[in-house]
Length: 364
Image (cartoon, rainbow, N blue to C red; front, side, top):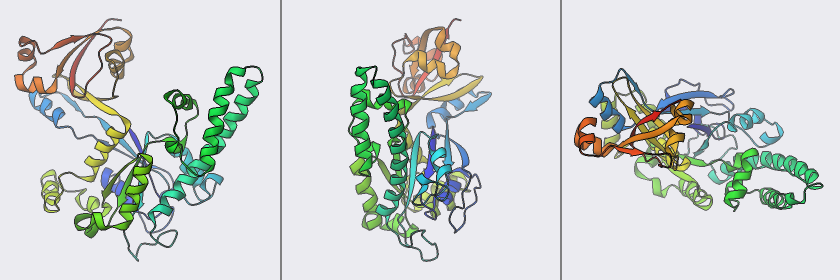
């Protein structure tokens, strides 16, 4: 999973990125501090995987990973090449989802690029640049389809859809907010739209508001209203707190978070939101050579899940030997689970479930 972190300059985006990834990206109080995208890869916490490690004592332990991309700040006119807009738009095309960091704190010492704190305006600024870029993409596709339609009248439906979508975008609305059928959505795979990408709004609050006053922060309320209207995810976060705990031991981090009345870190919450937003789950493979987590889409069938390991596994798929994590833990060992008939033999139509522990049988 690759998440692109975006936001206007000086909203705390790079500070949050550094805290979440410990990647050491430069962070400073001036616009365009981030020019080339910084990349940080973090392990996805999974207690199930850790318990399997204790059970098998493997040679290799490989959790799932999450890639954060800290993308350059942008300003109005980015879609026309203003500021670092071209770099921003090119980099954002490569991510699975967007974490839009929105400034919801007041601080006279940190200059806002537009001179004041206004989440609605900030979100609209970035959304409009994505929408303008999408309009250009749709216009090019419309031209191609209209030319092709002269010899193929069956394309009339596609033209109608693209024109309706273009009209929607021209009103300054994102593709996420456009009502379309599954078939129409699938047709856009060949024309990826920036404003169609799933979004998680990270409302960056001051430490005081984050710990005591979230619900009364008017800026946060505004972000929640926008997210609700378009079906996006939103959660409050304090980049400063995340920076403070970034270098702590797990024990000290847990104690610090507990003192603040928090159960999990911002990283854990972002990962959970990201998996939910993108419809992802993990299946596990376990043995003495390696204990590993594999990330797949919900609804993935066993052969395609096997293909995540190696294409030969999918091509020569015979069956999947599956046991649920809870059943394995209750039995204490794979042999005990087999004796109780809890290890199932599943075929090509089996839909993988989160937490499945699997051994794939194949023949090439």
